[in-house]
Length: 281
Image (cartoon, rainbow, N blue to C red; front, side, top):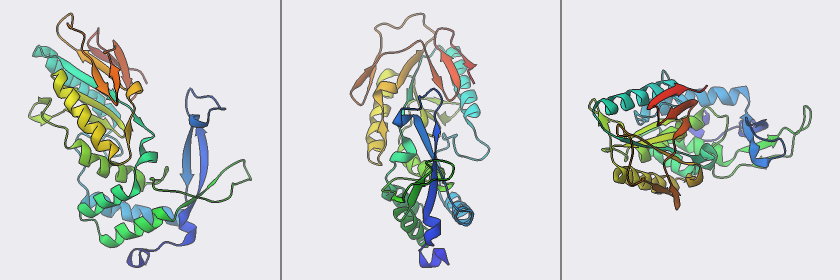
């Protein structure tokens, strides 16, 4: 009935937000909390039904390991380890950027996500229903165990805590990441990018190709509301040579990034000097 009429009961449109303090953040920092929205049980059941339809129609980038059944960040780590081992055996350098996306799901423009579903031939009634649902969503913030704030309308972005938001995020960003290819291929697969949810690694055998892909990503992501945060993006060169001369750099969103000796990605530590990867979970 909800799908046919493209409308949602009012009770389905309101969620309660609980703010969870992020690891390493201070309680007095406004940006140190991760907001989680809890919705009604019936609304979650409807989202589960809709999720099946969306997943069956949307084709994700095969290099996306996050929010997908049977895949994980641990598998992404194993793939990267294989790439580095293979490149080292062939005497090739691998230029890598760990890209930071600022407030990813919170920043996605709703209309671009729904247009992606239409382009993927998802049932029009479902897309219209979702558009109505998201544009008429409200939250009440949990202030204490027994006290809630007044309802506040959500605007233009995806909802944290919804089972639909990750698949909407993946389907939308896959349109951008599929444009990133041809820069690093091994075993007949293009591996110019490895993604685990909103954590991205950009890979290339050459510095110029890596910069081209970074420019493509920044431009594409900006069109859907996502910002690549240059100051938190890290750059590293895995090389079989003892020294890189001259010192390479890349630029992201106006920020010049010099190579570091190591960086962390999805719970793992990558150390250039040892040319090995070790778990840091």
